Length: 504
Image 1 (cartoon, one colour):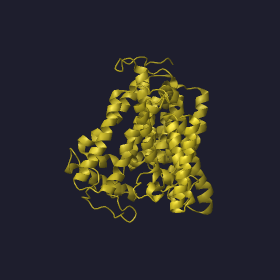
Image 2 (cartoon, rainbow, N blue to C red; image 1 turned 135 degrees about the vertical axis):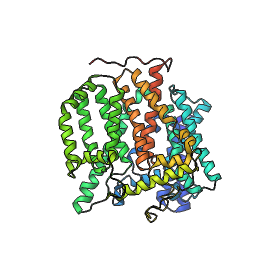
Image 3 (cartoon, rainbow, N blue to C red; image 1 turned 90 degrees about the vertical axis):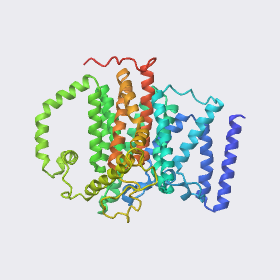
Image 4 (cartoon, one colour; image 1 turned 180 degrees about the horizontal axis):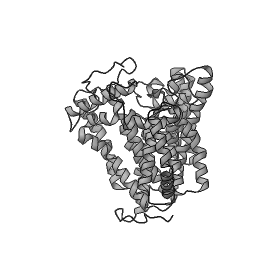
């Protein structure tokens, strides 16, 4: 069948679907959604997987998730309705009770089906996928299998089906998105593209937050409890690290201007985000960048500058340690991490709550340290917590600390199976970094290392494993790290590392 006939058939099916839904529901919006859905499925079938993958990445990082109550639920951007379609159950959007997946999940399943169909029938729509490290691919399969096994284990022990699906769905799709990235992305060709997607998405989210604060809220004496969401923390931090890594590997005036020009609005987004986890993630990423890289020009420059500025930095830290002034906010953020107030003395009720919650999570893990409880179970509230069920009725199914929670869900064995792909990805990012020659590739591999740090920080600090922002900031970078490591280390991926020293 020719392309013109295929397009005509797709338009006919789309029109018929739209008319049928309109006749059944008398909702023009639903009829249009059905028309666009069928037409979109045809576009996904015809387009290269790479195009659809990068498009989904950009949408996942820019469109707000209604479940996160963006802008403190006091304003909706023009993309909010699209966010409802992408991130909430489609059964809320169309009168089909069985359609209990989000638009993002449905699109990922369709994309995975397209990949399988093209491989099964040998359709030459795109070039064959690049080689990927087998240990990373196997670790992704292990993680996917571990999620399903813990789902079955938890339900077999009387777990709640509905709650288990909320608990496991993003964990299930993280290895899926990474595997799709291994298939779709083109290694060196997409190094700059993926970095641009991260920076553009972060800039958009920061400017949107600034618009809400300075145009919608503050001029009208509205003081929302937050402006940007918790998941924006990961995006902002990684975008800043993209800019820093690009300068680090090629410290030219042009790249310095790029870092400053794009970094300033993103830094303002971090300020509006008002979360110490953002600064901790940026600092940890910069520390990893410094420690992993050889003594190149940037590392020597930064080391000399730090030694010269050390007296001033020490004085700033000493004065700011006990000061509450906003100019010393970075010092206070460090203080709350390295020297938190003893339990019972802090005025921060959120911190007090999480201390008790973490204790209960550890006690839950101790009840079954090897295999855990499986999905669908609450954590054990050994020490009673303040009642927040009015605002979060299911808080014992999804606690803040995702690391300790999943240790209780999977035990040591399940936890290691779930996350083995993270240290494997770090291994290949570092190995590929030292073997790579091109500055853009080396910068991307450093950001891939930082993405694991950001994911882990967010998981430990605030339900990071439950966010599609975390999925789409981690998975593409891990996939590219695997591809670049395979390309740089060919033909033997365990050959001795060479070329670690660069001239100043």
